Length: 290
Length: 267
Image (cartoon, rainbow over all chains, first blue to last red):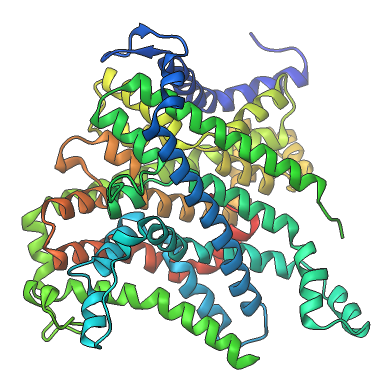
């Protein structure tokens, strides 16, 4: 039927253009989300027996699940703090009128565009407690070798993650810094504020929106890290680096327990959404306009 | 002060570059050199044969083709759908517009691991596991890309669209000949980001493939390394093959990447 009004015709065109998108997001987002919730209430090898909140109760009481949440929380927090501090420091350096700025920016961004497979395999080779090239170099120099993947495995994969991601936060902060009008710094200079004071009183408050964005993105990506555990440590030694998504992956595809793993996915999703909303809300309160 | 800044940036660059150079060096070493007690940083004679050996030990040719098909296919789909949907939300008024837009943006908050298990079950039920369809279809479009295109299309004057309508152009024609040509810079950003991220994607190809022949490079390489744990020179050669396309693409288009990150904070 041909709509009579012009508005009706535009609406018809709009929906015609939207058909593929509506089908796609229904089939590959909303249907799976519905399914993961439905499966989380079921148990058994076929995930077909109703258990109500049984999987959730089991997960919340399961020491292995609680441990993986703790590991993931530490990982995410450290990655957030590290990427803010290091990214901001590098961005402040690159914001100065230095020669070769573009080259530095390009080099520092390369690891971000590199697969976690490359990053993981490369650093596992470098840091291997026995055959790693770092140890062979240290020994050749007469220095003691390192055992970081055994003694501080979580810190080690945090450092490797920062190695990959800091260039990204640096670029975000650089854009934020370039958005701050020169006049503020000039005015503060005339009033006699030193560089330290200008950083804390002007630069940092005006960067708040960027810092918020960086922290939201880093929390979200930190909470769903997987490759670092799968490739570098296999979750170990023991369960020291058993990141949540790695844990869920193992429960789903190695233990083949779709009900239990679905419940854990939903729990982790709730944590991520809650974190995001809290951060965005806190950010709105502290927002500055200029 | 200047010295300090150069020191900081220089140190950070060294920490970034040296491991990557070592990866290239490792890929050209003999097996004995990779294990020698005196670490070899520059191989005696570059072993280009390592790259050939890789293809005999694992179906590396398949990995490369699979990665190109999957990342390329997903990128094309994004370039086809994201601007069209972005255009509709930028320029049309229709019932439920805001509801649909919120429902779309909400999907940006859904991390992939939430979809992983149900998508696996769905693909298994459709007998799609271990096929290109399974690897491509869950990523045909996304909220980030659509939002980016909408932001870019919104400032295009409505008068251009009205004028084309008065000239009798069809709606599809208006989109294709009036709107799309103006979005080229945004399409470049969208295409580059989509390709690089899909080229590097790890979790879904790991879950959705069951035979070596269907693996993409990141997954094929990682599982190759688990099987041939000591053959680090070959793992490094595979890493270089995975690394070079994105590195070259990035070097030639780094301005787009930097602008893309700065504008939208993609991913």
